[in-house]
Amino acid sequence: MSATAHKYPIGRIVEFNSDSGTRLHGFLVEVPKPRAVVMHVHGSLGNFYANRFLAELGEDLRRFSIALLSVNLRTHDGISEAINDSSSAVEYVGGSIIDFDSCIEDISGVLKWTKREFAVPSILQGHSLGCDRVLRFLQVTRRSIPFSLLSPCDSKEIQLRWEAAISATGVSSDAPSLVLETAVNASFPMLLPELTYGVSGEGAQWKYPIPVSRVAFNSIMHGFPGTSLHLRVPCQVDPGDRIVNSGYIYIGAADEILTCSPEEMATRLRELVVDPDIDIVEGGRHDLSISGGTTVCSRVSSAIDRMVSAS
Image (cartoon, rainbow, N blue to C red):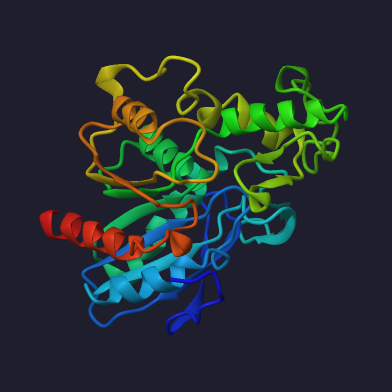
């Protein structure tokens, strides 16, 4: 699949609510009489349509009579206006300002909607930082939902490399250990200086700053992503508390922001999850739609079909 834009399958925009009351949106790729629905969770400051591979994945899943629901959590994009239907108030959301753990209430609310709409099993799927969100939800709620993780990464190590790259240019930047004070305005925290947070990976596409507030920054760097999936420190999950859900994990061996070997990432994930199906793909990239000659989306949809059939 080339890097050019691709037409999405026939679908519709849908609305649902976080358990917090915030109105959320998603794109639903429908199928007649679905056997299951995959709830896709975006990474970082993503949204329900930006990843090109979702168009191909939606088509592939239709072959197995599985619907795809790509959702915007409150951490979508940077800063965005939203409505809280519980209070009828306007509020501001977005990955730049919202606490990482908001994913727990958001995913919970969407799963309630899928249960009402379809009455079929759900599969939780995350991409990049969305993998952390899916794992965090399962860790906290202990829900017995199968999952699919695409391109998991060590977000804290990516940030430490970003800081080293910025430091090498002679430009000052706040380090994680220095960004510990609480926000001045809890409802709309001020953004940190421009180059505080960012990605420094292989290739020009993966070198860019990310706007972020203290609240969002600290929740990533000192929360679940910065601890459980940070490979410089031992796994902080007791063996008896590992996630026991059925799971498929795609790791691209040529992932541009993977900061360790694929095998090292697989080892950490096995410390968090009991016996996951880990698929290390030679030539696989962070963006599944440009993973060389490997049809990664087909591998993902086939793995999801196997989990649905086994459930």
